[in-house]
Image 1 (cartoon, helix red, strand yellow):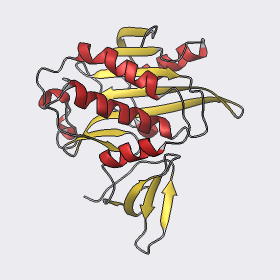
Image 2 (cartoon, rainbow, N blue to C red):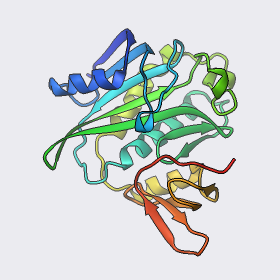
Image 3 (cartoon, rainbow, N blue to C red):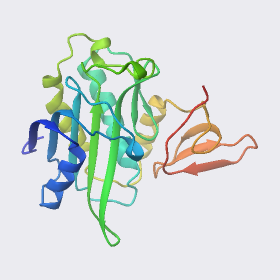
Image 4 (cartoon, rainbow, N blue to C red):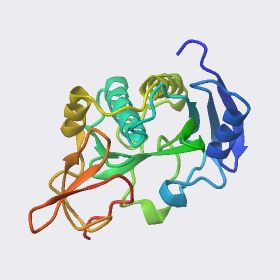
Amino acid sequence: MSGTAIIRLDELPSTMEAAHARAAQGAVHGTTVVAAQQLSARGTRGRFWSAGRGGLWLSMVARPSRTDALATLSLRVGLALASLLERTLPSLPAVGVKWPNDLMIDGRKVAGILSEARWFGNVCQWVVVGLGLNVANSLPDALAQDATRLVDWVPSTSLEALLPAVVGAMADATREAGPLTIGELNAFAARDFLTGRRVVEPITGTADGITPAGALRVRSDAGPVREVLGGVVTTPG
């Protein structure tokens, strides 16, 4: 992580917007904006994300050497962070990766990842990858059943200790956005939260892994498999 710039701020509307602004000014790969709290944090498709003090809220400028499979970026970051959390916090339960951009512990969401690219014509200029990781932040009552925090499992978890390791792992994971390798596909399969589960959005069927391009495979009731590159997954119940 040598040379990676980490810009730490107390409060921001959105670290995503701040990182895009830095990228437009020429910020190099790995430049990271961190806020103690966000007032207008957003997740996939602009959905609100609760981002109060005690969580890890950051966005990183990525300038991958390849951009022919951009949908893989969030998955690569998810795999890298899942592995990092388990190494750093050995008593933590297994961390699953839910396509396209969530980390899960015991069936509940502990982190969300958001990737946004900026283009000039057909050329990708940069990507900002945002991370919202629940560490010791308060969770709204409405999310109590669906979300969890690291301190719920490892009370001694230190946000300050996690930050440099997380930034380093994300910087390494976003150096390219080409198709997933066999090794990466196998690593995802070992953590795949959705495979075998019924989904009703973005299409109806049973989740059946992912493709090298980062698309979700969904097997319909009639048998054929369809591939979906983007969207929000909804499961019954």
